[in-house]
Image (cartoon, rainbow, N blue to C red; front, side, top):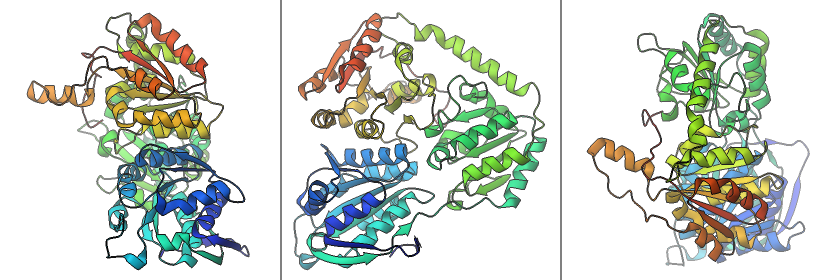
Amino acid sequence: MYPPGKVASGFVMRLSGHGGNQAVEVAQRHGVNVMFTLSGGHVFPLYDAAAKGPTPMRLIDVRHEQTAVFAAEATGRLTRDPGLAVVTAGPGVTNSVSAVTSAYFNGAPVVVIGGRAPDYLWGAGALQEMDHVPLLAPVTKHAATVHDKLKVAAAVDEAFALAASPRRGPVFLDFPLETIYDNSEVEISPAQRDRASRPDQSQLDAVTRLLATARRPVLILGSDVWLGRAEDAARGFAEALRLPVITNGQARGVLPGGHELLVSRARGIALAEADLVIVAGTPLDFRLRYGKFGPKDAPAAVVHAVDSAAGLAAHCPLAAGVSGDLATFFTELAGMASTAADAAWLPRLQDAVRASVADDAPLLASAADPIHPVRIYGELLRLLDDDAVVIGDGGDFVSFAGRHVEPKRAGGWLDPGPFGCLGTGLGYAMAARLARPSSQVVLLLGDGAAGLSLMDADTLVRHKLPVVMVCGNNAGWGLEKWPMRALYGYDVAADLTPGTRYDDVVRALGGAGELVTDPAQIGPALRRAFDSGAPYLVNVITDPEVEYPRTTTGV
C-alpha cells in the first residue's frame, strides 16, 4: 500500500481497542499532541481516543474544515513534525481540499484522516457516501482508503513517516465506519522517516567549480532549508564565502534582519545582474523568475539544491542540480569551496539595500490620512520580539509585510506560499499559539482574506488562544484591483464595503478589538492588543488608493 519504510530493528508496537485508539496512539508516537478537527460522527472514535485515551491529546475544534488542515499544516511547518487534521466524510473532506493542496505546494508534513461511509452499505446511498481518494491523490504524497481494521495502525504509522520524509507533504487516509469503530489487537513494526541522502560528491564538485569562477554570485534560501533543519549550516556557508543572500518563505530569518549579507531588498538588482545563482530549498517557480536570472545576453548559471531528487527543476537549464541533505550540502561546500567574487559586488547590493531602507523610512513614519499601510509596519516593528511568529494572510497588505518585516530567527514567518490560497490565517495563528506558547503571535490580515476565515476567531476564544490580529482594511481586493486597472483601465469585482467593522466581529465572538483611523493611534492600539492576553483584532482603515509597487506579477 505504501512505499516501503525503514523499520526500527527489534521494536514492535502492540495496540488494542477500536481503530481510533490505535490511530491516536500511533500519532502520538510521531510527536503529535494536538488534533485539529470539526465534529463529525464518522470520526467519533478518534475523538474518544483523544479525550479518554491513556494519554489524552488536545482537541481543537474549528468552524470550517479548511481551518483544521491549515492549522495542521502550520504545526508541521513550525515544529517540523507532522501535524494532524481529522475531518468527517463527504463535505468534511471536500471542504479540506484547498488546504491540503496548500500543504502540498508548501511541502508541509501533514496527515489528514477522513471519515468514510461504511463498506457494508457502499453503493446503497449511505450518508455522505463518496470516494474521496481520487480527489485527494493529485495533491498528496499518498492517498488511500484502509478497509481492514487490522491495518489501521500500520497505515497511520506509514502515513506519518511518509509525510515527514523528503520532500515532505500531506498524506490522506480515510477509514470506513466499521474499520475505525471496530476493536482489534495488532502488532506493528514502526516505520521510520526516510532521511535525505548525502549529496553526490560529483554534484558538490560541480558547484565548487562554479563558485570558483563566479564574479557575481547570489544564494537564495527557501523553506526546505528550515524544514530540513539546515538553517545553521546555510548561514555558516553564506558567511564563510561572504555570499549575498536572498531568503523567502520560512528561510526568512536564517540571516536575521539587518545582517550584512542579507540583500532581499536588492533582489531586483541581484537577480538581474548575477552570473551564478544558487537556489536551495525552494522551487524555481514564478516567485523566482522560473529560474531565469542574470543579463539577457549572459544568463546566470543556476544551481538548484533540493533534499529530494523529485524536486529538481526540469523546466529550465541547470548548471548543476544537487539532491540530498541540505545541511550536508552547505557544510561540505563551506569546507571545500571558494569564490572569485568581484570585490564591488556585495557592496553594490548593500548600497541598494541601504537606499531601499532610506526610501521607505518616510512611509514607516507617515502621518498621511487616510493611513498608508506601511505606517502599520513602522509601529509593529518596534513591538516585535526576536522570536515572534508573524503570519501573513492577504494580498497587497501582506506584500508590504514581506518587504518590511525581516524576521530575526528562521521559522518565524508563515504565509500561504506558492499556491496563494487565502484564508490560511486563523488556522496558522492557532497552530502558532500552540506550537510557540511563549512567543508573540501576530496575524496580518487583508480585509479580503479576513472574510474567508475570521469566524474562526471563535475558535481562538473558546480554546483560550491569544493572538494579535491586524487587519489592513482598504475595502478591496488590491492584488486584483490594480492589475485589472492596468490591463483594462477599470476594475470590477474588486471592491468591499468601506469601513467594515471586523473588530466588532471578533468582539461579538468573545474576543476584543478596536478600530483605528488615526495613524498616531496605531502604536497604542497594538500595545493594547499585545497586553490584552486575548484574541484581539486591530482594524486599521488604510488608504484604498495605495498600491503595492510591483514590477511584474511573476517575481
